[in-house]
Image (cartoon, rainbow, N blue to C red; front, top):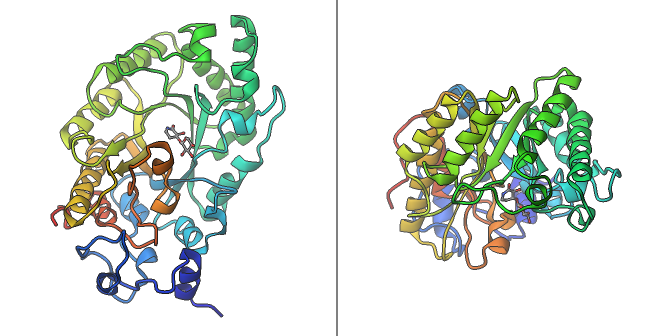
Length: 386
Ligand code: XIL
């Protein structure tokens, strides 16, 4: 029988896979940090060794530490080591499908639903006892052509929006801990972004979407949390102020909203808000009566040039973000937007940028992994200086 190490070497496409941080130092991987990390356990195979992030998160009062995963058909589903790490609920206690619950995938033609891709991640959650965040219902990206090319009136598009929201919530029901009902609706100045929803329906599309979601959730009889999810709202600014206004407005109309998701796509260095700013804005959302979560955390290099000092700074940025959540009781959990550089969305979307996740492409761990473990344990960061 193949050992896990030979399976891992096969999966990673490598002839040698480091067994422990000591061995890692002697390899010449282009992406491995030159510095050492001290927190891994000797004798373990590093990609699967303690510390276990979800275990630590739960021991310290959080519901989960989790990850997005992009399956099927991306290579993740055939990479044995990727699967081993993903499925280990001691490391990741929550999953989010990165793409397959989006509009283009779930309603490719009007009224014709396809739940196959999304179900892959639902099954992973159920088979391994993980929390499932369902993502997302109404967004201006990754729409189906029939939506973007349709000849709509306010009434017909509102009806189509209602069918989409209610069909997905009803289909997956209580398997979803939460749904991101609306994704990325605001521009950085706090006004609504241009979108088919806003352009055709007007600002009412926002409360209407949450109202439709609420009706569907109530019909299931399950407690499914309804979230607004966005980036650039992780510190006090015009956009986060608009989100707070909107939450207050929904609540004043008796429309349910349960959570604000802070995507937390950051850039190493000046692109990451301070711990104090992240905590302050989470406290401000919580004060409106919602819970919060970090929903898509990754911290990329721009440009993607790394060395030991850079990795230590990235570790500090991860540490601060996770600590901010730890310091806010109603921050329920943290999700990274996939965990290995081989599968990160960053290089495709932001050419020249990268190395944003907790694991190098060869599944060795970065200092950031150990920084997250320290932050979850409310310990000082042991890897944040080079
Ligand atoms: C990204 C996926 O990871 C990519 O594979 C896809 O090409 C584009 O979308 N904000 C979100 C996520 O809410 O849905 C996005 O996911 C990343 C930014």
